Figure 1 (cartoon, rainbow, N blue to C red):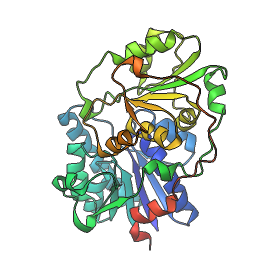
Figure 2 (figure 1 turned 60 degrees about the vertical axis):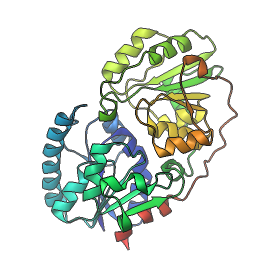
Figure 3 (figure 1 turned 120 degrees about the vertical axis):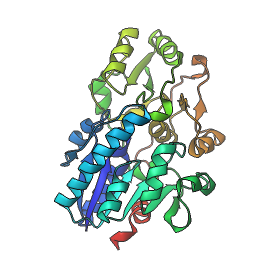
Figure 4 (figure 1 turned 30 degrees about the vertical axis):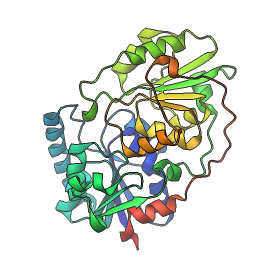
Length: 337
């Protein structure tokens, strides 16, 4: 079967890659489309699979997002007609595949694990044929979006339990970034300033945290920024901070880190799955997955820079034993037969 997978953010490449590789191993043909945002293109180029770039990001305003979405959906429809027919489609948070799939009569699934992206889910859940979310998100929270009945499907655990199954971290990322092995490693992931649910949010917590970390001789700090502007701002704080110029193997960094402080949901959940102490700086409304991780003490909320505890973590036990991604794929694409 020919399967269409749309990738609209950096994390989506990491999440959907193992599912795509399983599809290909089973003999299915997969067509990848992507939106140029953050390090999405970097990760796709590193992966080595052919892909087609469509559209642009619309910024943090509703009007900008609407204009960009309209243009990209039209481009998606043209792509689908030119490269189809497709048997089914899959995306994680794409607002473009569900409407394109409806127009082209392609059954498709939308996945997500944060329920308060209201505008996004109001479109996705109504137009997608299937909505796949972790069991931590109550169905009651999704009814307002049109996700109910047989359309709504829950999976156990975190999506990271599946996509990281069998994962062994690669020490090459430490050499690539020049991270000394004799120092504690702290990884900081900045906030996605372009996200609608964070539009206008600002906090002095991050600069204070970075200055504190840079002042410690026993700590190596890697800061993963979202764009060139953020990278320039971080480098201006201290030369001691390691700021990669392009996408790196973030999962291996998280596995080797003694602590992660992040405003990004996917990286926080990777840390929770891999056993790395993690503090969230997320400024939006807390989602059900993070609520559960906090209750289980697998995720902590950063209120002040003094909250971060930096101690040597036991060596990572590879490979990571999570959940079989074949189970997630079967829930995502029942049309495969």
